Image (cartoon, rainbow, N blue to C red; front, side, top):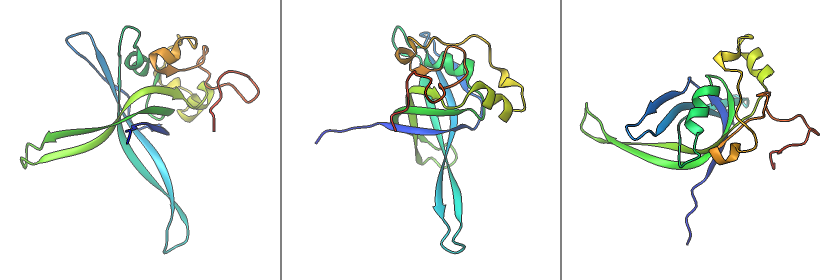
Length: 167
């Protein structure tokens, strides 16, 4: 039987990206990410949000890899994004107890904006969240694993052409 490891999640950043550069020139941007599941409370009959917090790593990979750079430059706490990647099991020894600890995280292949620049600014109170005015090019964005329109205004409005989400 074949194996398949792919995750697609839509949610918001819980903190600004933390970036680390390696001695070999590589880079990783680590982000906290939250998705919300809805479930019905059996006692009250009301629907409740159940948040799930996930760590996501975005690397610069290969000659054209700029995903970590773009995450660092354009994403801030609260941004609504779609992450596509692979589940990875991280393990370490707990210094306090000496026991082996485990945690699943997502290693991102692509990240896409899911809200317009105006929506992000209004959510943040008009400040823009420290984003710069230069934007990644849409033409090669998939190659680098990051998709954003040329003017950073988010996905095209319905009927506006461009790539559409296939669901």
